[in-house]
Length: 167
Image 1: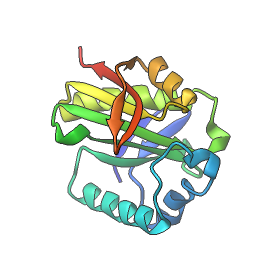
Image 2: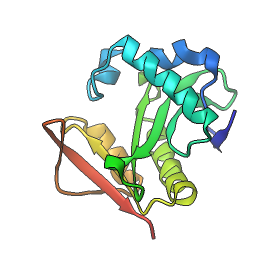
Image 3: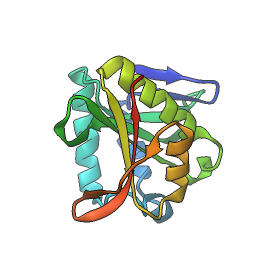
């Protein structure tokens, strides 16, 4: 199991095969998922299986769990993926269980993952897309150093777009 980062507050690591239900639990609270793409439990189950396959392929992209430092509680999940097929742009995404909101954890994770994208994937830019109503995530992204750009249209929906260039 590969660990992406370890901080005094959390670990970002690969999910274990036996943690499928832990992963699925991230998408059970409507307040947590209101700004996420709408997926069925089966679609999220498929994504988890794809995530495990990406680990086996040593992919630099994918989804990783965020766990407490004692590795007993899943705090959330973060992801990096190629943005619109570009090898130079990585998209950052994340979801946190509600009990971890408002503690600066998402900002710390976003800073870690942007650094990871630049150092490990060779990306020239990290981007993120949020719904207009997701003001908390917009603040997280700005606190992590990403800049608000012109709006972006994905799937016919206009959204807030953020980016950070590698220096």
